[in-house]
Length: 619
Image (tube, rainbow, N blue to C red; front, side, top):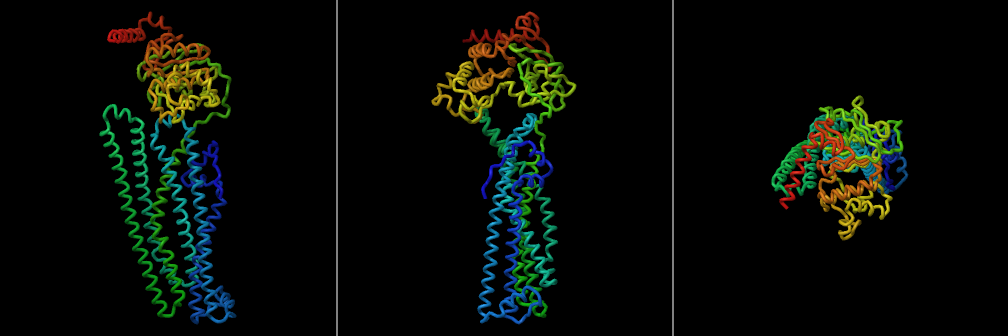
């Protein structure tokens, strides 16, 4: 079957995933229901053909080789009547042998079809889950990403999806076949002999009760193991990302011991699960052997007393052996089912998270850039407010500088402006061109608000691709022009492949200042009417800082610019400077006005000026 590409990014598709684990699995198979029906049919047909073989052997032994007459009107009687005219007797035996071979061959064909379709469905489900997870995660709120560990998210999108795929490609087919075997066995065996059937199925209640108890206990342990694996991956991912910090502070031994603790917990859990699996497999062997012994013993007694024909006894023995593997495999299937249920639950937790949704009547106004904060109060997760009654207004072409200590709410202003968080109702408003931003579609708003963070993120792509993310259709000349404004063009050209140079993961091959200037280039290319620089020149020396700011003033003369920084030299040329303290506006004015006021701004200015003078004398 041709493997079609799955389009799982559409928002309406996300709703059914949250209903439950089984609904999630059913939704992931949408589009393959017809193939699933063929899959079920092939499984049933293969089992019935396999069960037909012992019946042919039974009739051959009892009626062709023996003297047992079948019941009038039965299929055995019809078959013997067909063969009655065939002579000699050896020809009829060869035909019976051919029928056995044909049934086995057809059963094999259906089993191949079953496995092929099952594999295709499993791969389709895995692709659909991966694509839907990725598309859904892209739409989840920023707050959700802040609260989740990257390693755990990756594990759910990879290992947990692979667990689901592995179950449906390898174990679900065995589960369906096991159910079909028992269903066919009960019908066929009861039609042959009630007593022998009851003997053959006597241990089934014990097996099912034991399996149910095992399912409950192993599901808990698999959940713990999955959580431990997520913690282990998060630890490794965090360590690899921060490898330079680890090396700089000589933390290799500490980090190795911390990772060893995670792996020890993970290993101990899997050892415990292994022991549980061993117990179940051992019990399965005992139950299987006991079942065969009961059938053999009861069959011999029934044959000796004339209650059972030799052919029927042989058929019961074959059927018993056919059920042994499903009984023994039931433990593995249940273990995998437990893992799959846990993994499906972990996947569902992500898909059940509410994505960012704009109101149906969201607006997409032509944004010019007039920004107003009207008595804004905001706190994270219902905690104490980070901002308290903050108000200011900016017109296109104006620059606002924001100064404040750690935790004063500087970055929160930027997060609220581009709706990474929303101002709660009744806690003030943020307006752009007179429109409350809660009424503006997020994607439209964010395309008009360029935000540059202190630690810019660069993808493992070329410099050109990283810069052009905001405008994929930008020309080479436009990219170079923006790079010159950010004073990064010369650095780029010093690389062997210029703008085609591949940067390492998270831009690790670039210096901090180079990464910040590449990020500035990226934002300038967007030509957003509102630009926010959140301490984005902290890794640049003061001389380059001054050059970049001078170039930016010319380039962004028609835009609203908000600059957040700890450097007075970076802020002093802004039209207005706002000093935040504990989330409130302590001072507001121009550089000269705040110096004359003699408040916090003046104290910080004097402190930084004295430090700069001391550094110059030291040089």
